[in-house]
Image (cartoon, rainbow, N blue to C red):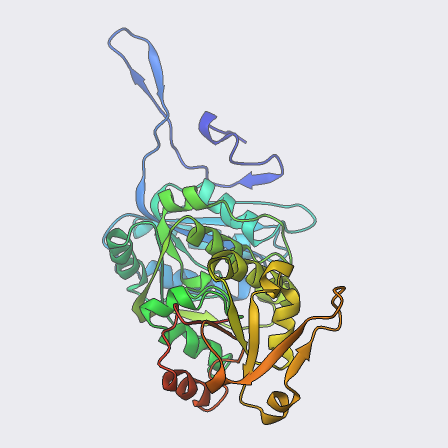
Length: 386
C-alpha cells in the first residue's frame, strides 16, 4: 500500500486506505532541483461520515449526498470502523456516481476485531479529508438537498460556530418531546439550555463548522463505547468561546433506532458531565441560589454538587404543599454534624437565581406560567437543568 509522506501519520498500520487523496506533486525548479509541495489542494466542504455496520441505510444516505444543490466543491470522507457487514462495499459502489457529479470520495478504515468508536472514526475521517468546512453526516441519516448549501452560507457568516438545523425525526412520533426541543429552541436558548439532559442544544447529526474551528477545539474523545464524544466536544467548543447557530429549516431526516451509538452512553455518565459543566460555567459565578424542585431530581442535584456549591444552596422551592409543609430537606448522607438542613419554600417565597430541575414540557405549561409570573429572565435569573 503506497502512502505519501504527509499522510503517513494519518493512517494507522491496521487501517486500509482504499483511495488515498493525491496531495503532493513534484515540480522542477529553475536550478533543476525537484521539491515536494506539501500544501494539499482543498475543497470547500468535506462531508465527514463515520461508518459502522450501516449497510441497510447507506443507499438512502449517499443518494441524498449525490443530489445536494451546493455549487461549490465537495468531498465525501468515509472511515469504516471495523464493520462486519458490507458497508465498505456499498460506499465503494457509489464512488463512480459521486465522482461523476464532481464529489471526490475518500474511503478508509480498519479491520480490527473490535470497533474503536465514533470519536476515533470521526477524527480519522477528518484527518484524511481536505475541506475548509466540515459537514458531519451520520450514515443512518438523510440530508435534504439544500443542507450543505445553507449550512455553508451560515458558517461563512458565523465564524467559530457550530451550525445546526431543524430535523425531521423518523419513525414519525419517536422521541417527540426531544424533537420538538431541537426544533423550537430560540437562538438565546441554544446557549442557555446546554445543561439539560437532552444534551447539545445543536445536535451532533446536524453539525457543520470550519476545519479551523475543529482543529482549535478538537479532536473528538476516542474513549470508545460509552463515551459521549459529541457532548464533550460541544462543551469544549463553548469553553473556547465558540458560538451556536441553527438554520431554521429542516435539513436532515434524523433516524431513531435501537442500534444508535448514543444508546451506549449511560444516564449517570451524562449526569456527571452536566453537573460538572453547570458548576464550572454557572455556579462558580453565583454566591447563592435556589434549587427549583424539592423532589427526587432536585435533591439528587444537591447531593451531586461540590461541598462549596452545596453551601451556596439557600433553599429548595416547589409547588407541592406536602414538600413545603415538611419545611426542610435534611442531607442525611452528609458527614457534617449537625447534618445540613435546607429550607423548602413555595416558589413565590423563594428568590432568584434558580436552577430548575423540573422536566421541560411536562407540566402543561404551569412551570412556564410560574416563571413568567416572577418576571424572570432565562440565562440570568435561572437555568434549566432537567
